[in-house]
Image (cartoon, rainbow, N blue to C red; front, side, top):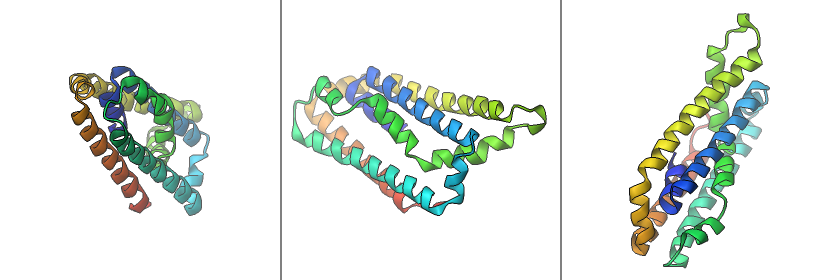
Length: 185
């Protein structure tokens, strides 16, 4: 949600929606992986979990550092310059796919609601996972819509934009660090 908020504030509603769409598809990757049993590898293999965890943490830190440097690099960053910084859709996909906690969430939470006696376990899993991802994406869209007035102020004020991007970058680095140093439970 913080990623979607940052993209919405920096680039407007379009970037916010693209970011939310990206996290939706990234979440669906986890749903299909968990339904197919692939996510069990992350749950059972400390090496696989750690690899995804640290790659995801490094990616968040990378995004944060890039935001800070971009904020400092150019006082007059325009929306087209922000778009050149990277596709909000693909960054959203990667941010979500590289989050091992999302994989473990779907692996541990969704099976509790799958009724094996009704059959079609894979289909039930996909349906429940899709509902969960859709609810998360709905919250991201609400954040995008509410960020509009503040985002306009950010785009109009180079100083405010620089401070917001620096703060958001620092928060992204903090989240990456938290992910890297957090317990693997």
